[in-house]
Image (cartoon, rainbow, N blue to C red; front, side, top):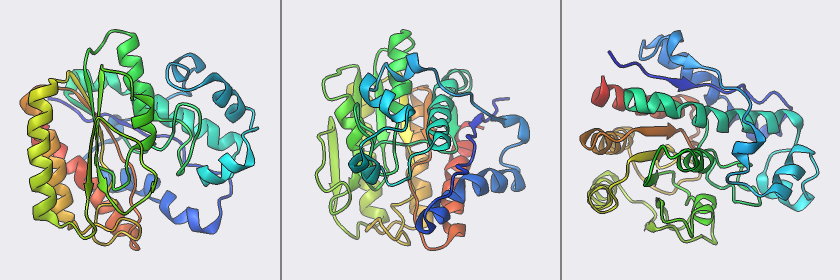
Length: 302
């Protein structure tokens, strides 16, 4: 019987500004909730190692990466990242990215793998922003291509914010198709150009969202014929989200996840899932929404 495999990176221990502590709680609570509900067991969780420089540099610029590791990024860039730069933060980012890379083998074995964190899609080739320093899915995609483990990769980014860093990284790379379905009136306000961008109006509800998504997934899987999928499953699309501006219900978000997994399973395409954002007032809503992504996968795969 297939088993979940889930990467769990260390919690960021460096002191954070008060406004950033609450969103970080979910990284502890999601695995606890999944274990409590017996969606996973302890043997399903793996702790990734710190990613090697060689693999990072398949995607990120040497000058930027060196400055990040030596904690010498320009103050203006640190402000755009949003976290105080520290050794602990850099190590956590390297571990998160490693979780997505190390998880690839499990996706090939069982069809799906998860990273409790990840989805750092605002990290560009040569800069970070929006709480993202390294782009975990881009790094893993380039690792697949470098090692000839995939020929055509589809990145499905359903976080409410456009995957601007991912779009920039793969703008001239035909082997990777970037699809971002996001809020039109939302960060980043200066957007990059993905291979396919769907900018949704404020207040988009379940029915409209799911209809648009189904139509575009049908087109993408039929036309692009990917042999590997990365899915960014942000739950900041919820109507309860403080930053999202869309109006999906918890069930609508669950149905979204089911659609993605159904298409991947239909075509027998391995999928790697990173959690992305979620900023509802209630931590319970955030955790439940993220856990629903695991439940959707369990319904389709197991």
